[in-house]
Length: 211
Image (cartoon, rainbow, N blue to C red):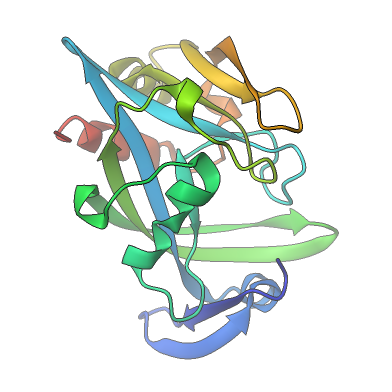
């Protein structure tokens, strides 16, 4: 929402105070976000899960994205930001279960709702081992249209360019009551939120170490 407040920072990540979401993106202030990728192992294979952003989102609508992610509100800690798992996926976990993977900086610009934006984010990236069936997730209708999983090594190959597509099984919202339909989709790298592919390959490789 436009009236959300974020803690904002300069290039050296020195605190500058707070600003609304709209002002943060209009002026290109650095701010913090939480990323969490869900993974699980099945015999000698590892799988990773990712979400489909709702078509009504103001940025990157209908793109595949991190399993759960979001901005830190003003005064919020990374520990508190893991609320995104409960809000977006209906998944309960403790902060101690999260496996730190990286802290990255990303810059992007574009247009949303007729206004130009500059998005400068410092993201703490985590992995979470979860055996919860996809059919047991409770998706946030305003944010998430579906959640899928694919073979981790195949996804790495996808972003490295050695595979044109991978097969993903998942669930998608099928009604206003939150009911889910099981689906199979062919996924291409171009369908993910536009980022430097090195983000995806480095994070996915790091997920191999999650136990």
